[in-house]
Length: 116
Length: 112
Image 1: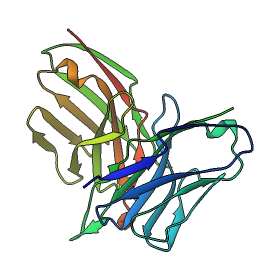
Image 2: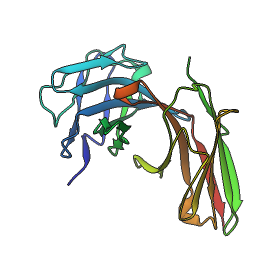
Image 3: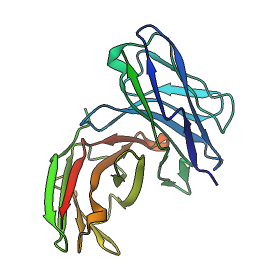
Image 4: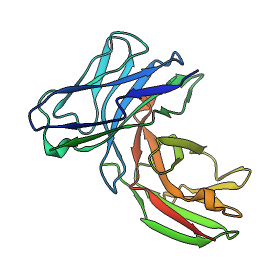
């Protein structure tokens, strides 16, 4: 298994540009998550999904959109990039609740985004 | 709201034990996690503990949970230079969705 993969590894955007961060997992996980990590800070949840066709907002959703048309893919869209969106973005996935226990989240390697 | 706090830095000598501390606020958390992040890499799950446990040991790692004080610690025995990384504690909330709240991370610097 490749686990959780993310593309691109890094990107430089100009203010106002748009882009899509790709995330894919081959573990047949139902749950997928997008986090951002600002310098010196912990991770903040942007959006999450509990299955294909179902998405919900996390702590910091403003300026982002997501979709979940398949179990494997969970792209994150930035429509009008702003300097405040400069960050490292991590995608994660998990089975969710299994036998009453919460399964752990597996993280991708991250995408570094710089907005100038 | 939920909050997870950690000290930012810890420096130890190779071979010593490291203890990384974390405090959290949500007493309804079911699981508490420790993740490791090496430079330029994603987060790697180290270990986790269920909230009804006091201690969990996994090779060189020992997790202690004081639920009354909402205090979690990670002890690394015989710390090696390869243990140098940022360590994040996280609490799981949100029931079935297993959303995580992360601390700011503790940078562990291991000196030879």
